[in-house]
Every structure is written in C-alpha cells, then in structure tokens.
Amino acid sequence: MKKIYHLATCDTNRRILSTLNLSSDVELQEIKTNPITPEQLDYLCKLSGSYAALFSKTARKYRLMGLHERDLSESDYRKLLLEEYTFLKRPVVIAGDRIFIGNAAAVVEAAANALR
Image (tube, rainbow, N blue to C red; front, side):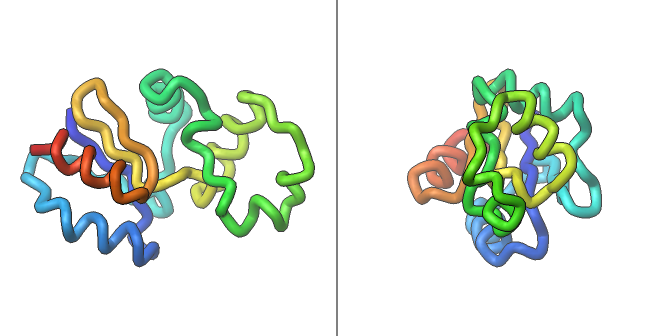
C-alpha cells in the first residue's frame, strides 16, 4: 500500500506533494475533508510505534489548549488526534510497511525513495 495523509490547505504539504512525482498507485487522503478513522490511526500507531510520534506539538491548538503544560498519555494523544486533524504531524507517508512522518528534509527524501 502507498498512501499519504495530508492537509490540502498547508503550503508545506502542497510543496512536498508537488516534489514527490507521485504515481497513480499512491492514494491521497486529505485529512480535513476526510478525517482519519480510529482504525487508520491505530494502524499508523502500529507502524510508528506510538501515538506521540504522530502528534504535532507545533500545532497552534497545542498551546491554545494548554496541552504544553500537561503530561499527555498515549490515550490522550490518540483522543486528541481523532478530535482535531491539525494535531497530526504531516504529511504521513505509508509505503508498504514503512511510515514517514513530518516534513523534515531527510524524512521527505526517504519517503520519496520508498514511493519509487
């Protein structure tokens, strides 16, 4: 399976998607209009090793909600990821049984290589 979870309104996500030269076998899921299901999130957690690895602490709501002042558990991360799409660190690229999370240059390059 080749799949990318992304946010269409995010300039960084749009830039990354445009540089990946995606083939027709890559499925795109726009997370604002087509939210991640609990089953999908659990699968991403299985690949990544934790819900915390999928969680973006740079999301605006992270500070607005005072989450930076709390010790969040894995169940907290899961609940927040399902409630608010902006908490997903993105893009999330799935290539077979490998997962690539975020927009760091090395991660994007590794994801591009895996998608080829």
